[in-house]
Image (cartoon, rainbow, N blue to C red; front, side, top):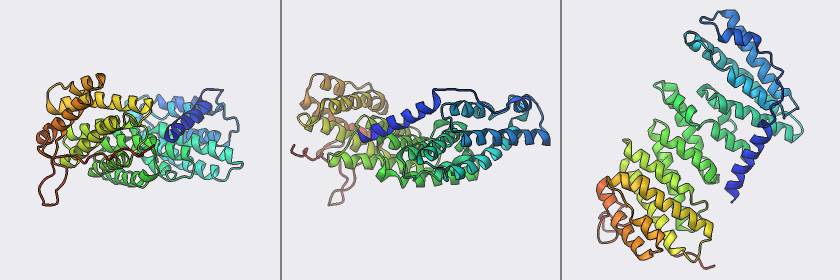
Length: 372
């Protein structure tokens, strides 16, 4: 519940700052002329710089937070040229100016009083960085990724994990690979203090970024959830449907360590099934409903594709409250002490080693739920 409250708090603040468009005070006449030019010269570059300077200054200095969204919209709408021939020139200058003035804006916001004004200004600058999806602005977000305010941390993470940002990051430029590794390291440092909301952002990034460290991050997120299942402290089980989907995606798209990802997939799905069975008299209706969704959707979208044959036994077992049949299917798909399951055989993985050094064919058993 705490994690979901963070999401709602972040969205609530976001809505408060965007639903009242107001009238922006930034002059756009000259910048709009430059956006329509096919070739840019030095005066044009100065116009771009002046526009970004004025717009960010308006964003930072305003005390009318009901009109601040309009200023952000004005900046975002003019972040690129309308002419393909001038796109590279325009983007380079806009990016350089954005970094300079947004960085200065964060410094000014840090000195604001009262705390509420400091928070709102910092948040709006982060939302602007988020919208620009410029990898050259990543360091500005990374500087706030460990902020004491949960909403600021959330938007800092959001800024460097959006699909558009990740797409821009996945290029052949060596500096981008270095930046991607920095982001992964920062996200790894947040795992222990993050709920499902920020873990979801990190997991999506881990599955999409084109570096081996992305797989490591996804494995760590899966391990964190597996541990929480094991000690019966997991919350928001619906998130694990996304983790399983992302593991499946990496397994199916040429992962470097396919066996490690498949092992986590098998263990996490096993715990989801066992939690549903062993927790039937322990869990509340919301938890049961979320587990049901994960069980059925994962069977349909992941298990069926991995095995190459439509699978519906888990769905039918859940619909009929047939726990015995569900556990039999669990053993068939994932394995037990006597034999390897269909999934480990198909993907060529095991669950680690037994004491005698032989491969373990069964996932770890979920402990019984604590007494109420």
